Length: 482
Image 1 (cartoon, helix red, strand yellow):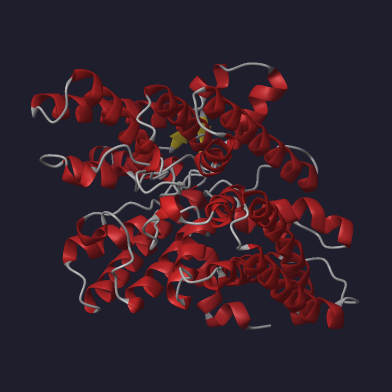
Image 2 (cartoon, rainbow, N blue to C red):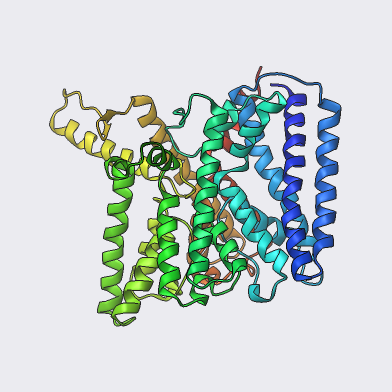
């Protein structure tokens, strides 16, 4: 492990990140909202810090190891979000406090979508755009983008890629070269974004709203340019487009790559993870819509619209809303919220524990039941036609165990700040699953939560984005031994 190499890479990445301040500056100039100076100052601070880290270490040359990748991924997401909060602290009378700005920045970059801001409709256009851009950049992961660029600067990228791509089956590459894999992912991501924006515009959104919502839809983020989220437009067409692109983004991007390369859609239905997600969402949608109809919460058409939209939005961890589902009758709010723990497919922009882990946990549970009946039988755990190595199966149980333990510890921590149980449970679950919406006192926004609770939730967002072990490994003594 070389500190100089790590500092050099962090400096490079910060310099690259500073360029993301340019688009909101142009938006500010276009709309004349008077906020461009905040982005200019933030850009200057970010560039200066990047140069301070890079220049003294620019001669450091060495291939990255996996251990270096863990440090860079965790440090960069932390540093990135801290510097990403600068414009939110500098944009005038409505500027956020340090705690709120960091919370909002982390929420954007981790695609959580939880917000401490109210009166979003009246914010400057450049700030509205910037929030959406944060989610888009965080959706596929800036580290994956950096993997496509760093090799040209003499820095290998496989160690970064493995720590960034979510899910337990990380080592399969779409192309022989890791740089080409990262580029392929970003081409697909950008193509989906453009298609989503054009579809929104065709459905009646302005170019500004279409651009912003396409960013957060494809990233499965949930930020909106309005307090009422997608519900502001009250359009069945827009809701249908949003559902379609949330579903596409919740599937593994490797499936989109295969669809583009083979010009076929059959593998979507043959893939066990995608098939499980589709059946899970279908079953949850049927239960939700029937419950809304039987309780006379909505009429037939609106019950179908709102029920299907909220199921897909919450279960994929996007977090858009067309209705306040926390006020729905019976167990529906709890049921929808628990669905977010499943999340999207491995290799998607969705949060949660990932569908593949849920499949493996179910299959391992079934295997243990069969072993009680047939103690001497050798029973393989299979996903589709592929046998899963015991090492991966054990890693999934390890992930689940640590996930539950951390959830409990952070729940106790948030409750210790004076937050009630329902609010604490839902906010910790929402942050850890990168969902956004919560129940209880935080159902509308997180602005009234205690400052300490917000910092705990920031840590939960980071854990969820980097899938827990990437962060926790840094706290083990063995990691730092030579």
